[in-house]
Image (cartoon, rainbow, N blue to C red; front, side, top):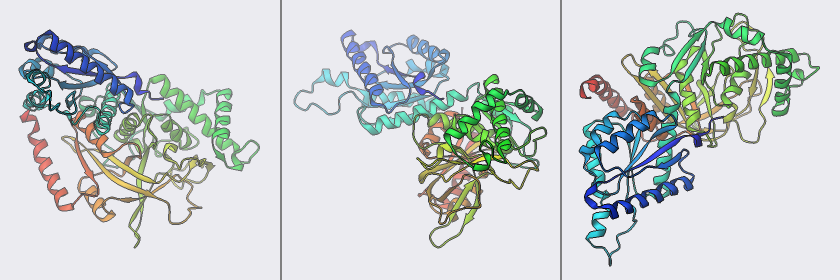
Length: 504
């Protein structure tokens, strides 16, 4: 499971020796109190670590280099308690390869009207100290999140927490391995992409394997491992009677268990964080992995169908961002529409592979084997359920040739109008914001893929912070989207990213 408490965010305060040792001691004490409060708030998932106040170019650069080399440090929160001349920060910031958030706050909440004097003014100078620091960040064209407000405010702590989750996902991508069994679905465009460019810019590596490598792992499973997995199924799900021990299709479930054990063993042995399969590359497997994929996603693995390694990595990133938060993350696909006077809706699903983390709370998914009608293999076992209702986000990542683009649509998941007794797959029904008419058009203009990562726990703010850290173009489609403005944004973005490398 993903545990963000093992990660650190360093709380870094800037000042200068001009103020004298007594003032610097006060600055350090205030900073220490703030770091402790952040940890106690529960809003920031990683451990916030107080670092000594920085007052020289040498100490700043040394800390930045230390952050770079500290594996569990995912980024910095910077704050200028007093004035800290920004030229001191150039060497450190230009060497820094971890993300940072700029907290613009001050220790005191209010002005002490009857007591304020110049000593107070000289100590509490974040109002202009942070502006000096902000200039050098902009001058160096550094991506960062700026959070403004009093450090005790819940909204400030929430924003820092959102950024920390995005930073954790980015750290997780660095050196991550994606296992790809088979290739893309043949002749599909959007699931293709430049894996070298992805590794250079995004940090993860895609490893290709023939389906025979997975088949070998599946064939090497033991009966004891399969029996243990079978018992887990019986304990956790509403298992169709014909799949239970003694049922006429129990062998189908045992085959599904064999595939899950083999796939788990392969991924664990290779230290993979995400993987892909495709229904066109199944030689040697009795059925398309369905149940196995669903359960592995529930344990935190990223997944993409039909060889879609970009979506697989994205699902993993959003799994990290959502760790410890209710709501879940799943691979998803816009499957079919419902045009209705009550609101045009999207029925999201896939052939099999939807994660049970997004299921209606309290309802056991149903485990069954039903025809797939595609792929030419035995009926695969899978979990069927209705997704939870509420606000969610559907996110896609595409290779646009010279850059990667992330597009997200905020949606409202609603109950199905009627039961779906003949649809044996997990599904979600949603109203896209601002409407299907606008959202679908904007998505298509943006080149958004049909495969997505879908979540109730991750928000557009998380994705915006993540895209900024990654240096990836980000577009959101929500209740404020106007199609003419969105199309203009696409045109301006094309120009910006064409010129971007000449700016840095």
